[in-house]
Amino acid sequence: MAPMERLLVIGGDAAGMSAASQARRRRPPEELEIVAFERGNFTSFSACGIPYYVSEIVEDLDELVVRTPEEFKAKQSIDARVRHEVTSIDTSKGAIEVLDEDGGSTSWESYDQLLIGTGATPIRPKLDGVDAERIFGVQVLDDGAAIDALLDSEKLETAVVVGGGYIGLEMAEAFVRRGMKVAVVDQAPEPMTTLDPDMGALVGEAMRAMDIELYTGEAISGFETTDGKVSAVVTRERSLPAQIVILGLGARPNSALAEEAGIEIGPTGGIKVDRRMHTTTEGVWAAGDCAEKFHLVGRHPVAIALGTHANKEGRIAGINIGGGYATFPGVLGTAVSKICDVEVARTGLKTAEAESLGFEIESVVVDSTTRAGYFPHAAPIKTKLIVERMSGRLLGAQIVGKAGAAKRIDTLATALWNEMTVEEMLNMDLSYAPPFSPVWDPVLAAARAAVSKIESSRR
Ligand SMILES: Cc1cc2nc3c(=O)[nH]c(=O)nc-3n(C[C@H](O)[C@H](O)[C@H](O)COP(=O)(O)OP(=O)(O)OC[C@H]3O[C@@H](n4cnc5c(N)ncnc54)[C@H](O)[C@@H]3O)c2cc1C
View (spheres, rainbow, N blue to C red):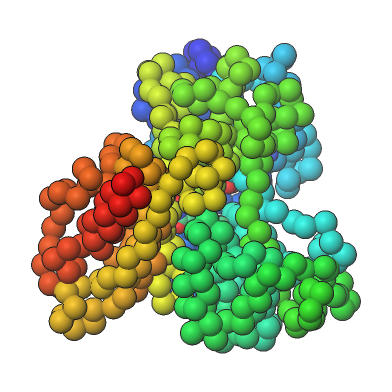
């Protein structure tokens, strides 16, 4: 008996395969055929693990693959076809054009439901030499595999990361761990522009302490090449030798395929979706980095590329495709990274964002310790809160510290999610024992400081 409906998925990673898996849970193969097309070599991989694979903390690339096409077939009757690129969508016919990268042939595949999970595309500046060999954007596992293979096959000594986003910085650290001389160039005054500059400066300190050369406030003007390969990154001030370059300038939603098909794109460049992850085109869904997000504090559309969002959005889309009802409320942009020797965490709005959205704010920065001050290995941790002055509502938070930033930011994200004021946060019943925190945890110490500041500013 022919399947009653057909779901096609474009993109075989977090968003696409989460959606496929959820749809399968609700509808058996007799009711719903599911075919996923992935242009790379891997399905359901952890791009987040790439820096740890390149640095050789993770030894085997396969460890970063959560589920292979064979496993999808055997366990869930999902036909995941790698090395198949979708080149066009025809929404009027309900079909997509697929290129088989090995055979070179194209075919049209029809759908009843289509899920677009094409991810994001690393930003490539339009500068001389940018298309030279060995200039990498890092987005998918194939990028990680290619970088690692290059480092294994040749003894490269110099790397330059262009841009100070967390992906570039994680890669910079990976190169240091591989024994290379590494420079990072960023045109912003401090690295990690998802933080306020004062908190970003702490990241810069941690990088310098690991012998990463950091050039801030410098825009690159081009790349020098030798025999088609990159040899240097050029700024107005200097030329930095580079046998390999990582573009760490952020990523844009990969929405071109959707846009060409007339599917509506939002103001941030992401595919416009409703709260069920349905696009404005009947039968077409989108999730993950390619889809526009709604910011829960700013109440505005944003393009934020995070695996946490992609997995959740894919799940929501899959439930709806499978005949259920689920909604995705929006995002706070909660993120954490380990950059050199520090944990760097953020959630909600940073100062400049809050101000540009019209909030009247106060902010506090509190120095504290990761453990009770007298406890061995107590280390500094800095917490910044951004608060609406008159209401006392928390709008955003950032933490940089040797340890414990990751989980503390989740407390703050929970407060933000529940629209708590700093007064309400003050008495939250958070845990304490000397090996884990001072008796006033940095989160509570920061809330206290914020309460004092807004009280005095209101007088
Ligand atoms: C180095 C690195 C570290 C990261 N660390 C973190 C972290 O610590 N925490 C966190 O939350 N997030 C992290 N992220 C971000 C996270 O990996 C992404 O947000 C997440 O993978 C997005 O999932 P997605 O399914 O939307 O897109 P992707 O994972 O990009 O998957 C999209 C897939 O679609 C395929 N595709 C695109 N176009 C086509 C087409 N036309 N035809 C067929 N296939 C196509 C691509 O090949 C890709 O496999 C990191 C990302 C990187 C690169």
